[in-house]
Image 1: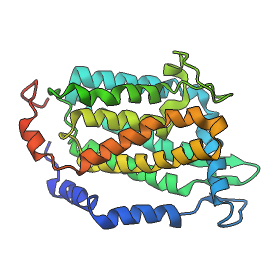
Image 2: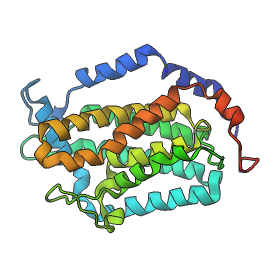
Image 3: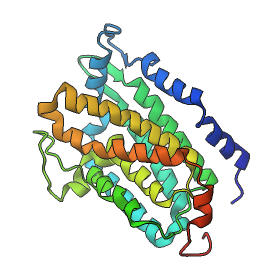
Length: 279
């Protein structure tokens, strides 16, 4: 497929600029949450955000959880079997998944605040979704297998832990029931699926969409830092295990961001393909 290389190059250059990261940080301070019943600004901002995240509308549809666990499993398995034949389908699914995160996890409807929106999450998740939609057009993710050092697979167990999400939702304590691989809400949760998607891209780096990897990792890192604060400092006695389960988001996002900022030309020339051509 012939794609607009100049546009892709422009995206990569923009997302490397210092002002892009300054703008990203400023967004956290200038985009307040919304509540239809109102709230005291800025004193109640954090309360509104916590309330939205704890009462997000997506959690009212638990019957959908298995679908969003089985589909990504099938797609990832298909990548290893069919490789680039399923690249566009995978990219589209990931884009849709981020739209679901944006709408489902960023909006709540309760008596306390009415319709409330964690606006910053909504904006960021939709931005990530847009870049995955872009990737579905340009198809820069190349899933042809290549030989790589064994140590690069360190992301796999952490991504699996996030995807599994072995927690008792009533008590917040560890619960390693294997059925959660197929039934936990991880499939509709940004914090649990993002390590999976970034982790997969790092295994094929540098032949991936660098701009998509970079922005997905940047948003993941920022949300990961916020979760470390919330889970380990605000209510550690209750949320400590949930904090542990967010460590994959933090460290894999940081790793993905570092890779996206490297200059991979040497790696592109020396990484050896197992198969000679892109399907």
